[in-house]
Length: 170
Length: 277
Image 1 (spheres, chains in turn cyan, green):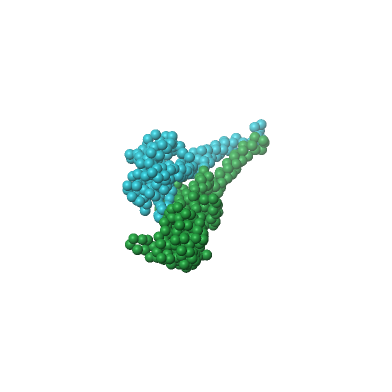
Image 2 (cartoon, chains in turn cyan, yellow):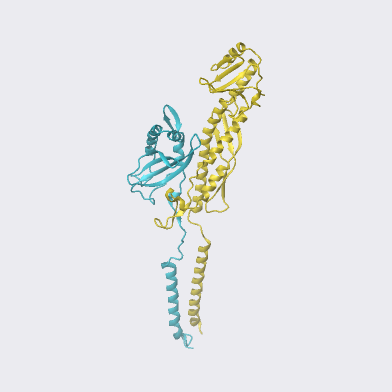
């Protein structure tokens, strides 16, 4: 035994230090480079934190058609009966869609409302952006007066919008 | 072995043990945790949204159905289309009239309205198409970001919540109908919507709808006026009295039969026959 301790100390100390370095390098790679501690949980897209309030409010809005007051939901039922009716309703809904606030980051976007019966579009109001994609879609089924289901979709048609930067409107 | 000689091996061994334990804990926790960030909150929002859509669908349905039911009662003296009343067949110039007498059975337009409402709504329940969109991970476009799938690739994803929602609407029944003033308040049976990715968790609610400006009392007033002034009395005595009570009434006399039109209500009475109870 010398002053520095064990007689064999000089023999195993470089080995132990090397082992420690290897252990530290291994776990550093494991934790930081491979990112094992990082959560793999997927994140819900920001656009999912929304409901269909905007579409429901639009459908409850009253408009005037041929001197009669109808909600937009009732007008869509009227529009489903003939092209002439559809054109009358379209004009009224166009005006409402233009007044809607557009989310930040969508200066080139337009709100579009589309109604389908048996998968055929019979009403399309609002302006569709050229080569635009659809964002912030909300859809609902409403009944016609004879009980047929009419599917109504509202979406933002936008060419240069990015999903990540669109602020969801409530 | 002195203190220094003992410390280094101990330090290396404890480092190895601590880091290995940490790795083990991280790995096992990751396996046990399947929650995606924001998934539960968004699932609840989606479930409430679906309930709002069902409620809106029922609001609209009841608006149309109540009009249809009322029109049916108006053209059948307060009875449904399928009734046992005697009838005066339609002619090229005139429509069909039903004769309000004992052959019709018990006179209860309010009950008949409720039954018609229930029956006609079934067709609307069957046609409900849920627009519920389940979550999916769009690995190609946005790795790790969860979105609801779009219509275009709908077939690829889980439709169980959507189908369950439609099934719940198809099973609906009217639980209670209450009339207050001129409004009819309809309460439906309970709906249970499964909350996505949370087995055993449900959002339960009882849809309610209102039929506004609902007034069926005109049948009662007409019945009372006819019973008091016309039955077993002469037409000359009955017609002026009815006209004094109902200013819009139009009456055509054909022997013992009086054909009556009051706004949209159309029926006939036989002066020699008693009205139904």
